[in-house]
Length: 95
Image 1: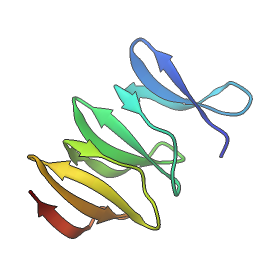
Image 2 (image 1 turned 180 degrees about the vertical axis):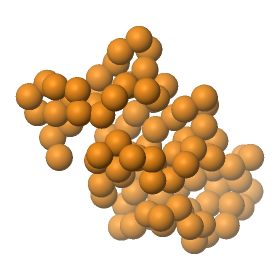
Image 3 (image 1 turned 90 degrees about the vertical axis):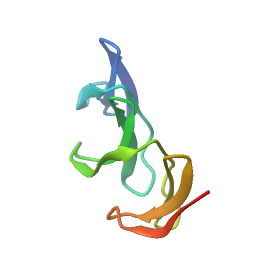
């Protein structure tokens, strides 16, 4: 998927390869896609959207990283763990 991040009214969304808005600018922060999911931040909390803009993993993390080999780093309350692409915690948050 060819996308670029677009900033409108201090919100971030995505443009397609033709420069047309493909995913509405509704989040404070939008990262690039990795394994068909992108980290987005809403009200200071991180979650993940798919390439259609659907929220796949609801915002619930203080910090969240990109997916690599099916897993992503997340942080909750100062503790770090890993989730899978469905949002299931596979390594529980640890200090």
